[in-house]
Amino acid sequence: MRSVGKQLDITIHRPEELSVPLRRAWHEAMDESPDYANPFLAPEFAAGIGRHRGGAQVAVLYEGREPVGFFPYERNSFGVGRAIGLGLSDCQALVHRPGVVWDMQELLRACGLSVLEFDHLVDEQKPFGRFVTGTFASPVVDLKDGAGAYADWLRSTYPGVAKTTLKKERRLGRDVGDVRFVFDERDPRMLHRLMEWKSAQYRRTGRMDRFSRPWIVDLVDHFFQVREEHFTGVLSVLYAGDRPVAAHFGPRSRTVFAAWFTTYDPELRYYSPGLMMHLHMAHAAGGHGVRLMDFGRGDKEYKDWLKTRELRVGEGFATRPHPVAAAHRLWRRPVRGLRNTVLAHPALREPADRLLKSVGTLRTSGRTGLERPAPRTR
Image (spheres, rainbow, N blue to C red):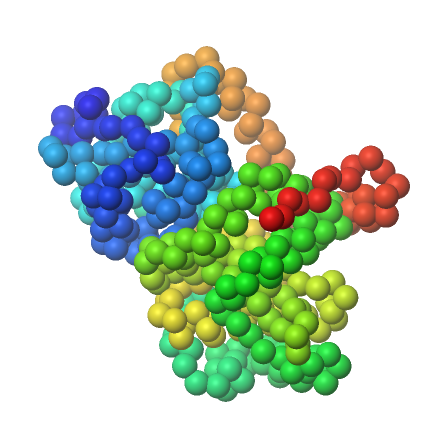
């Protein structure tokens, strides 16, 4: 153990090697505060990253012999760290029991980190305060029990979009086949269909294709098999007849459902299948005991339509005096600043989107050398 202040000690572990008692204590800390109920903060998420990323670690904070805090992160050989699953995780924090206080500099030192990058930090994390370079809205939906007919629930919950959405669903039913929704689809072929659709969407819109990375494909395959109380991988599919129309994959805890990968059949885009998918998920999740649907940060029109409120998440670099920390921050902060400036101003964001889509069109037509390999499936 290494001392942190006067009261706390730390041990460092690989997340996939945590003992059953430590995982149980982590779950108990999640249960004691709504700030930590998000499935991205569960030990199962950290363990999944650990299975596929060599630098994943967890710092366990102790008061005496009692584990009271859990801090998952990734570290490279130069002591540069980042929040666990940075780029994939929509919620980051040091999960701790109520009343636990820690020192950020001592934590970084104990973890062997000169710098730690984060971009979806829970607002409650006060010791990170002076290292936060910006805060951003993360839209959420407060869910009620979704029992009862979907159409009735939709009319009462979202009267502004109900008429148009139900009309499009009826048209989809007439044109393609009866519309049905499966909240927890267990067919792995549909998971691979989702990844294929999403990969094509990334390329079509000029974005980085996450599913061109085999480790992310394997990670999603792994999470599809996880069925735990604080983390379950949920695949939802909207069908018209036997034809899949839209799909979503994301984790849920007992009370929080994280929107993660949503996509749809582009041939049916005029029916607004993505919006249909999110509405059906909200209805079904409420019926399964979920009380919060978290969309994660980012400006999307459907998020503005569906959100009931916004959480705040932080972005920044926690550092201690070290040349590596200064160099990393000097390199990374301008990149994040430029991205955030573009995303915050529609006059800049819309031309950037058009440029990316133009690149995507060229990429998918085969007229550039930018094509990425197809996602690996099993």
